[in-house]
Every structure is written in C-alpha cells, then in structure tokens.
Length: 333
Image (cartoon, rainbow, N blue to C red; front, top):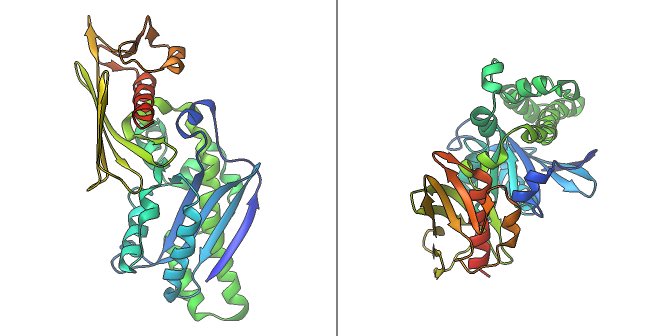
C-alpha cells in the first residue's frame, strides 16, 4: 500500500451561515475508487481525503498496490477520516459511504468511525436544492465544475470506469509504464477531492437553513454528538428524530416545554418541543421554557419572548433549526 500526501493552497470552505451548523467541527472531503459498482464482488483500490491543515488543506491518498491491500488501505483511510466530524462527498450517500461500510463489514472491521461522521452529499444537495438540474445536461461532478469555471483547474482526463481498467493494467505492468498508470489513477482521484473541496463554495448561494432543516444537522456536545435526521412541525408540537453519533446510553429527560429520550438499543433520539398556534402563526414560548435562550433573540423570528417558527405553511427554517439545537444542548448539560 502507498500513501501519497500533498499540500493544497487555500483554506477549507467556511462562511458565517455554514459556521452556524459546523463551526468548530473538522470537515473532510472524501472519494473512493473501486474495482466495480457492487461491494459484494468489488473492492476499494484507492481512498482520497482532503483535510484542513492550518491556513491550507492537505490531500492524502491511500492506494492499494494489489487487491489484497484493501484491508490495510481501509484501516489507514478510516484512521484519517476519524479525525473529522463531517464528511463531504459527491453522491457519497448512495455510493461511497455504503460501499465503504459493506467492505469493512466483509473484512470484519469495526464501522464505528462511520457512525460518527455527519454526511454532506453535494450531489444530493445540488440536485434537490439548486437550479443546476434545469441548467445543465447532467449532474456529473465535472459538468458542475465546468459551470462554476473550475474545469481549467482539473487536469485528469479519465472517468471512474477508465480508472478501473487502468488499475488492472497497473497490476500486470512493470517499470515506467506502471508508474505512468499510477499517476493517471491518482490524478483522477486527487482532482475529484480537491475540486469538490473548492465546489463547496456554491453553498453560499443556496438556502443552507432550508437544506439543513430538510437533511438534518449535527449537534455537538462535550462527550457526544447527535445527528438530527427528521423534523416535523405540527399545530402544537415540534417532533425531532435523530441518532447518537457513537455509543449511546438510555436517557429520558424533560423540562418546561420539552421532553427528550435516547434509546441505547438503536442509538435513536426523540425530542418534542411544545408550540403555540396564534392566528395561524406557530411560535415557541421561550420565556415559559425557563432556559437562557438569549442567543435566539438575534433571530428575525424573535418577538416579545416568542420565537416564530412557522407562518401559515411557510417554515422559518433558521428559527426551527436553532431552537432544536438550543434545547438539545441545554437538555444534555
């Protein structure tokens, strides 16, 4: 197995709104290369990751010289991902992350690290929450890069299928030809992760509050993280479902206006926050909750001790997300 490292100019993406959800968390951008589409009969030959490194970024690739290197490759790759709280991929929710999990299970490896990572799938976000599907012929990563003007930065000329073909040629080759093939395979993966890291800036023109309300968001504590997965607002209650990112212990708690339950068996988290509906406007009475919610007064939906989270059918996504995060953090203090 080989490990290839490179320093990449420029910091990891950040913004004021992005920091509301991910401030203080370590973001990793990841991509894998495999010998096929099914983890049942294919393996991982290369794992790439971009991580923050001071004022710059560091790209690291873990390459298997032979197919039998997969276990060692995954052990090192997962070790790198374990430094992160959030993993960013392109179609990773459907391919990369399930593939990694299945291969680790097949090799008898503990998938604990994957459970702790909050996933941001840029393909899923752009496909559902941007206008790009209406503007572009397809949603391939290279097509989006071309639209963003980043294609000039990409120098590889192969796709995933060609990478597989080259890998089998690499195994049979020797000398200079072997190294040439390796450079092509590494470059394809390297450009995918570095360009995806650059692509994250498109989040600035999207409604991140709506996206986080829809796909969920992480809530960090000193000893554990919770990944909010589903939010529903009813006439007089907000229902929240999520999972503990890691080990969980049975827990039940309640306070003025809320109750929360954690089940260790499936690491599930269920929380309810009481609301009031005043002439079609759904609000949370922050005063009656008897908690210090002073940071929520800066929000546009705050008025006279109430936090507006829904007006008619229109959800105020930022306010809904912030009250959920605030109550969870205080419930586990």
